[in-house]
Length: 386
Image (tube, rainbow, N blue to C red):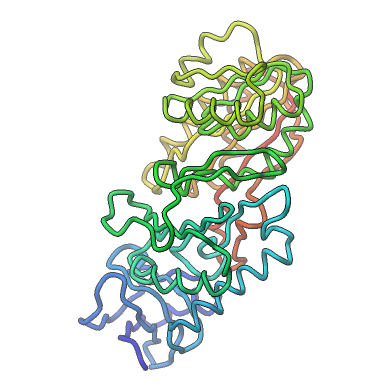
């Protein structure tokens, strides 16, 4: 079987020669008129040489490459690709353990499946398509997941656009589950929670935080469901304050604090982070600043950088001498170097001397395809503030 074709302009095949999985609209010379959003398409050179197969979308990124071999994207393909992702996680020791039973199974381009995220929460798998092509293939993907993970009891389809009518259960009906991460317990609700229900990408950074909090006064800003807060409290922090502007997030945080029996040294506040920090009188000794993405598109990058700078100035002003600041950006368009220099600018304006203790990133179950550096979206710094 041959799929409809897209033909590139002369000389525009270099990106595919380097195995980059995106084709932008400006590189395309001709599109088969039968193609619709989400369709599978083959990409050919101007000289008639096959290059790759992917999902077509009428947008800036016009094709997301799924295979560099001319083949049918059938049930066998999906099972093979998902098995490869699972095998990698087994090799990395991340495919579920006695004390951690939640992990990312598919991380888009990092697993050679652009536009697809799949997370495992105990007995449940959450499938989140980020492209029309993956949305159309969701049921085939679910069947392949059942082949690779036969013990899965629930498969929930949660598109990135939560108002999508296709959202719902492909298998089972469980809406939430208590999962374990490094022995800590978290209630995850994939129906009402952000993303797939929990921020699995901060696992390693939460564990690192545990090393620095014993006997300390800790603030977890933009806490969502209290991941950093639980780790800090369980590691012996004197006081943990959780902060988020969402009352739903604060409710989840309090539930998770109770689940881990850390209520005694934990308090949660439903307030705007910047306003809260302005009113802080007693400085914190450890602080986590993990805001949502300030920029999802290149056009918003300058405004995002200014936002990160203001936030880090405020954080640096409110941290005690000898304090440790964990600061993050998950904005893909703000790269590691730009974020670093933004924090440098904040430190200069705050008048604080700083040592970089750790460069922080995403864990191994959120792999970065070496041919797709854009996949390195989570960046952070652990800073010692004199």
